[in-house]
Image (cartoon, rainbow, N blue to C red; front, side, top):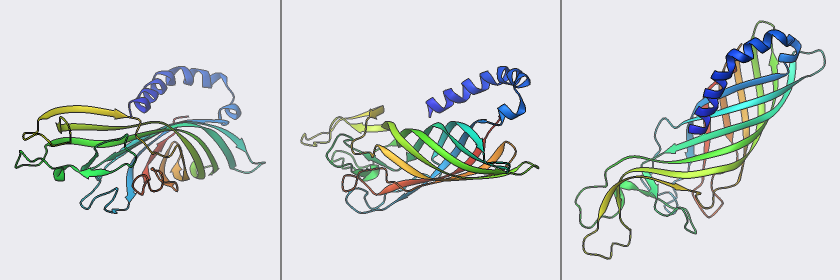
Length: 247
């Protein structure tokens, strides 16, 4: 998410210069490029199987994410339709009541935090936040129709390559999970573990945008799963949000 916010800040800084430049460039030239951002929440789809995802697993209602993108537009003949191809950085978050004890294991298994054994305590582990974070570089394509009044609709497809994966946890954490000692020690941590095992390198799905001028409603349905088959849970994101295209 920080990477996306940095991109937003750079865009905001460049806007005044781009506005000046736009006075020099022709309207026809400007129409060839689209720069914008998607801000969305993920509705995570998953299967509680008792092996990788335990009974009691649940996601937070809001799982914020964002995409920053640049598109090159090619008009299709004399019509109002365009074909666009571009480059994007996409970031997803999955907040849940569970945690991966070992992200380097041969299988990625989530445990409900309140169910993690703690033989020396009579209360569940106290935690503030637990999430996995995934970042992709995307190659999006889109067919877009824009009416003269400003209404527009776009249907697209994108392929993404994973460039970062991590788990973040804030709360109580055992020194280790062996529980062989009579008394288990706990520390309050703000921990980050990078490079989760068995995350699929490639992702792909379809997009839909319906809007007016520089604001659109945005949707993304991912066909590919997050984890390798038989190595992790069956889960994938469905994203809903807004697209802002200032130019």
